[in-house]
Amino acid sequence: MQLLKSLFCLQGFDNRIRFFSICSAIYIIFIMLASAFTDKLIVSVVICALFSVALGLTTLRRLQDAKLNKSWLFASSLSFALTALIIIFSQQHSSYYLLVIPALCSAALLTYPSKQSAKKNNYTLGYIGPVDMSEYQEVAHQGKSAKFRIEPSIAGESTINLDLQQQGAQQAYAVGNSQQTSPLDSNQADIGELIRLKLLGNKKAQLAIIAIVILTLAAILTPWLLASFSGNDSGEVEMSTPPQMTTSTSANSTIVREHPLVMPDNFSLYLSQHQGVVINWQADEVSSDVLWSQFSAQGDESCQQISFDKGKPIRTLSVNVERKDAANTDYFASFSPLDSQALIQALAFRGKFSLCGYDFSLKGSQSALGKNENYAHWVNY
Image (cartoon, rainbow, N blue to C red; front, side):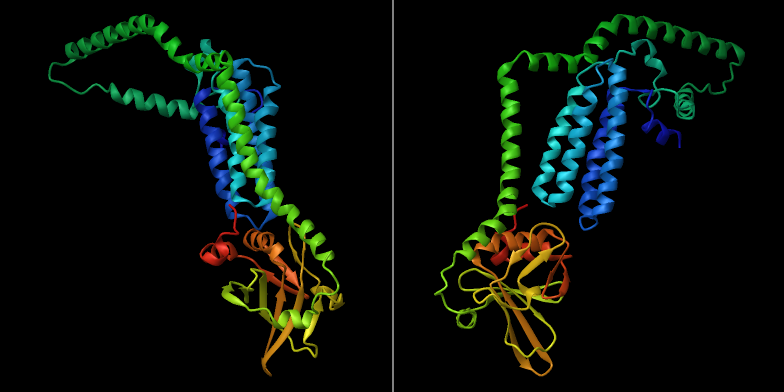
């Protein structure tokens, strides 16, 4: 319990090792939990808030330990919070690489030495502060004292005295040796500071780091932005389709459905000969053969578009009904080839969708799409 309290302490000090350990644990556990709770937005946001607070507090204690300006606090904690929210809402695997930005901000704090050198021996698990950590210090002392346990001997008291004299000599030697090697230790403690000073004095290294960060951001955000706006672009193209094109009935009679893929929640995917996506599911019997047609703008309005729990909806070209027998009625929702990339991406990374008044879960859809070579090339991680 005391260890947990020390993680949320405002007035303590964290040395380099403790700060590095806490930051590493936060990043690793966040990645694991964010991947596990992809479909649970509220849980993911709570995790983000909790980890952002923990990271901010350890950053504050590290700043106090190194006697740095508190404005550094916003560089690591806020960048982590913003990055975590982007990961949660975008649901893109490639967005996890954005964690490099707050990680670099945290790594910069590791280059500053501790200014609590006078209290070096008072650190307990890398921490000094109002939280009582003596129980962990006692365990450490017990472990050390066990190494110097005096075994019984035949020589009796004289042998014990000799052992005590040897221990005293060893301690005196250790003190002298530590005084001699203190410059070396101080140099080792300042290795991080030397690295920082070298980077600050090397403009080429700074430009290289900035270029790497910018290229990483561009590589991650460009596909995401293109996928987000593809729905609008395809909608404009579809609205400009000349009215003299074939009707929905004749257009769908020419569609050849290929490459069937059964999805986890009782629906299937097909590809047309033009690489347009077709979603198929069994539903209730209806009298009409065409539930919706974009070419005539007539039919069931709930079939006009497919809606996801996140992101923008995508319009359907048509929704047709085919009857195998009295007990089996299939719906086939056809989409424009212009929307294939955005639609497959949404099917892979969203939690659920609704179409024609029916709701479908997308749990396990990413795995199903990724294993099929006809659809996997549209899935961007």
